[in-house]
Each structure stands twice: as structure tokens, then as C-alpha cells.
Image 1 (tube, one colour):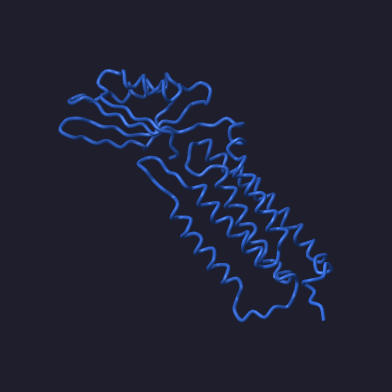
Image 2: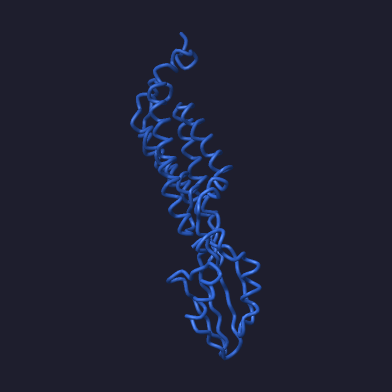
Length: 245
């Protein structure tokens, strides 16, 4: 007797639920991009790609739980345990793995998109394991497209990028905060509230904070801004780097 798994006839009853999951994933992608753009616009660490990964993966894993009758190509498979608990364990384990690639160096954070993609690709594996091959392929293709073209899509929209600033002042000099804020505003940046960190060593001050560009095309480039700050009276050293806060 032939198993239905090896006949093409088994695929047809699966097309309707797979089509619904396709639509769900597309909607999740659009909503994830929308929420992620808002965070990117504000100069936050998690942007459009990160949010779209998480949103699509969550959608895929939630949607497939509603079609348990279509799992494993619709065959009756003996399962002594609850498959939902197995999936829950996979998601938890992958979450810890993704957390391991997130790195923080001072005010800079990296690895968020990688962590989200690791977690999202676990949904692809779960879908394949459940026999839902077309949704798995569709989700994998969307993840690849967002990873390859996400940055280019973000560039098409206005955004406020963040810059981590580290200023070391000459001994005995305490710069007026108002003048510093005005200097950055003149060159297209504003200091982010609550981002200040100050250190004092033997009368020499060091300030660390985040500035956010007012506009992509009106803000002074980073190299020119570094030269400007380095030439400012009382500044001994200046370090700038692109950041997500």
C-alpha cells in the first residue's frame, strides 16, 4: 500500500491552509516593517529588518498551530507528547542562542539583526519539520530578501541616524552644556536626552552622549564633524562612531 506522503494527491488539501499562512506572513512582514521603520527613524537599535524577522517568525509559528490537522502532510502520526511543547522548547533554546551574538561596546550595540534572523530561521525549520514545505520556503525567501535588501529599502526613507560622541576636555575646563548643544544644532544634530555619561579624572572631564541627526542631507558628515570638534577650544580628544541607542 502506498503512503499518501509519496503521492501528489496529498498536496491539494494542504493548499488552502498554506495559502492562508502565505497571506498571514505577508501581512506580518508589512506590519513588522512599519513598526521597525518607526524605531529606525528614531535611531533605535532594532530596525526594520529586526522587527520584520520577529513579526514574520511569530506569525508563522502561531498560524501553523491552528492547522494541526494538516501537519505531517495530513497523515495520522503517532505523537506520544505534545508537539506544541516541543516547538516551545525550540523557540526558547534558539532565543538563548540569538542572545549570544548581541554585542555591546560602550554606546554601540551590534548583532540584533543576526540574533533576530537566527530566531526567525528556527520557524523555517519548524515548518519543514511539520511537513508544511511551501510556507517554509516562502518564509525563508522573505527572510533572505529582507536581509539582502532591507538596508536599501531603509535608505529610500527619511531617517535620523545616531552618533556616539566621546569628548575629553583639557584639565580644569568644564564646557557649558548649552553652548555644546547649540554647536551640534548648527551642524544638524541634537543631543539625545538621558544619554549623558560623564567621568572626571584628576580635574579632567570626559563626556559621552548620543547625538541624533536632524536630517540625512542637512547634517554635517561624521569626518567633518570630528575635525570641527577636535579644533574646538578645550577639547583634547574626540571620538565619534555611528551608533544605535
